[in-house]
Length: 419
Image (tube, rainbow, N blue to C red; front, top):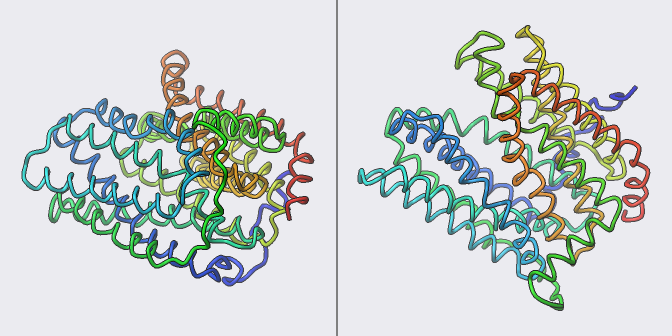
């Protein structure tokens, strides 16, 4: 059976949280746990503020696009820099920059100086910071984890943290907006960055080995792309992520249509659908964290990619709410296990001196590609409707997962050699 083995492997809390045995990782996790909740408080406040000022759904999409699109252009170059510079120091700088943006937002809102162009500008700056920060943060995880066998666990715990913050942050933000307004939400997010900065400064990370710089940034970017495409396991993994991102992930932007037009509900139903997706994602993150051996991850990646695609396809055509909830949870589970296990595999099999560039290509594969897929999904939906668009896209995801399944032995052999 294709999905046999996707149930949670036997294990204890010690197994699930085994990356906590590394003091630096514990510090990183604790700091991020506070900061990410603050980030979600800001996200909900940003959307509410913009909609309160304009009443425009188009501008909501514009701000989201402004935050995402810098990744498409900046992230590949940031990956080169992640292989050149001290990762911890750069993360400290990027987190401090994001903190400044949060405080500026708080300042202009609390003093009633905020304008729509100002919000878009600050959102774009945040997107630029995130585009630089992401390759450094992703490639920094192995610097804290000395045993490669625990790398997948650490990456899975990061995902569980993100999804847990997604549950906790928005409700807190909603209450704070009603009690004190959006400005104080931005201020609280700014304060939350102190937690991660204190933890980063407290770390005692082994000095990053100096690497000889062979040429310009463009030359090293080309070298990283050539390396990733020239190594079959990396090429297969990146191709799977790109196809899943372009054709699979855009469904998230279309959930309001399913809630209102397909299932005949309102905002409450949208919340339940989103919650089901989040529940599945959180379950997937803990499932991946419980896996003890990295050599089992390639098969889990294939099964999860297939589950993600099939769950999405059934959801797209489901007229029944109960079935839709179940399929959303299955889709969330498959999505997180698919993307996180791919991340773990890429970091496991990449050469250390090229890891930052390869991880940047992985991050670009969904952060930069998904907005383009969303535009394509919106355009196709004008002709055949949202449900059939999502279903058609899910079929392509099924095909890409099956193609990856045929190439699975190549990836597996490479992982075994790296153990």
